[in-house]
Image (cartoon, rainbow, N blue to C red; front, side):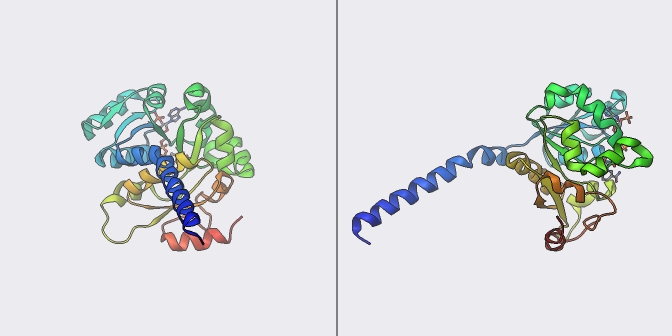
Length: 241
Ligand SMILES: NC(=O)c1ccc[n+]([C@@H]2O[C@H](COP(=O)([O-])OP(=O)(O)OC[C@H]3O[C@@H](n4cnc5c(N)ncnc54)[C@H](OP(=O)(O)O)[C@@H]3O)[C@@H](O)[C@H]2O)c1
């Protein structure tokens, strides 16, 4: 290789590196700052994760069908927590946690319609026919990830926290020792990056098992349910399609 070619190659590599660095700036910036998180559904899962994230320095807005309950919840946490209506929480959050019974998702999709467009959403919701009725059978047939995407149109959905107990979600960040993996599925890289950060701040190691279609494996009663290491999750996920 001539000196000229070597120099050309060096310039190309420098330009490529600059592009990579600049290209990754927005997610890097989000990585550095704290997030505004809208919680839609502040029951067992929403309150546990919202509390953990507020303690980690993020600002959370709790919402449900009972704003008085949400005000009490927020007051008990302190400065990083507040309460609002589901619409206020959806407008507030740079990322949303949707943690409602699956049967409530069509209503959430209607109530928040325009606010969900382009929004990163962590979907913890699992369809259970005995609790959620016929929509759960439809969702199970379609696959929980793709079904949620149809019910929350335009949202950039990442499935996570689907098959770990809410109590564990609330204490994992304080637990000593190696972290459990958290299987996740999603199609949108930026939403996955934000969700991964919140998974880490909740005390788990994010493990992307594939696109949203793989969200059908993220449910209680599947091989990935429960807590296991990131490596075990990867091994199990490799056997699924
Ligand atoms: N519990 C677990 O260990 C666990 C673990 C993983 C995944 N999940 C899944 O995550 C989801 C949430 O579970 P959870 O145990 O947290 O349920 P939960 O304790 O019953 O809480 C559900 C929350 O959703 C709210 N909600 C219901 N309909 C709503 C609507 N239309 N708009 C806004 N908020 C609404 C409820 O508000 P009100 O109280 O005011 O009615 C409540 O705050 C479920 O799909 C569940 O299958 C649960």
